[in-house]
Image 1: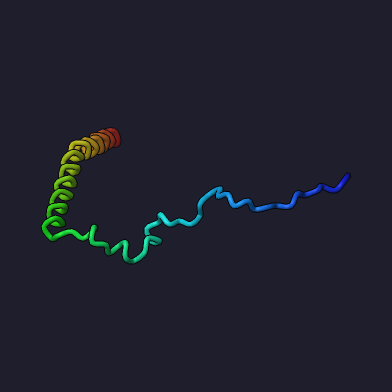
Image 2 (image 1 turned 90 degrees about the vertical axis):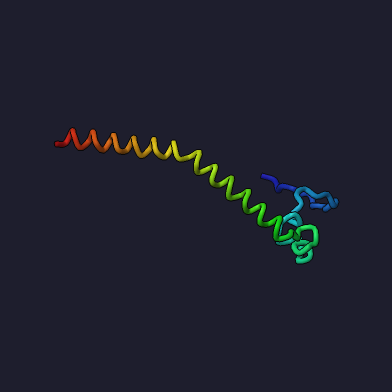
Length: 86
């Protein structure tokens, strides 16, 4: 068995995977978080909050029929078990 000859690694400067993570939120810097572009007035924040609450209320209203069906199914199963065991 002969020895394996290893070629010496030479860095040619190519980037295979960028590991700098500059796109991560914690690497954007303090000034980027406090920029003037992101500042919103109280009225805009209140309007966004109203829109969010309306969307959340709509979601819950849409889920009520499914919840009632599940509760009814459990009730029917419980009633049938009670009738069977008595």
